Image 1: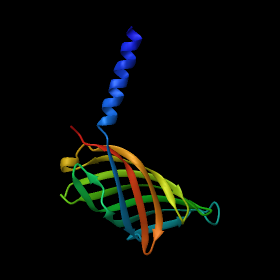
Image 2: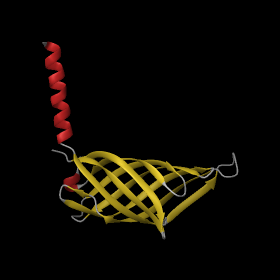
Image 3: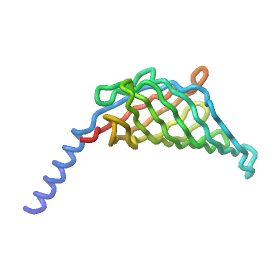
Image 4: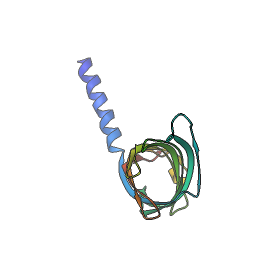
Length: 157
């Protein structure tokens, strides 16, 4: 009887957690980096590490709590070698309301496509305490890169 109660309680918690999540998606168009510094590592000819920062516009805004994303700035570290790249960074987006959300990201790919995971690490104003996670795919486009983002979020109570 106790095991049935524990299993039922655990399922109730999972259902409550799942129902509190809201789906989110969007498309960001990012320019070529405003700031970029790459250095040769020296262990082999094509191994470089660096940092970059670029401005982005949400061409298909992410809608969080009824408010849409407008623009943002992505700052990243890069490790490239043999045609592949690892990147880790933070994206700070400004919503139409002026509130901001903060998201970390980590990806792997080539010059043709980068895929990865992301997660909210908080926000300001009504987005304070924002949580969530998802995936992204970025591809070169024109004078920058286009990133398709999808996932889920939960606002603080």
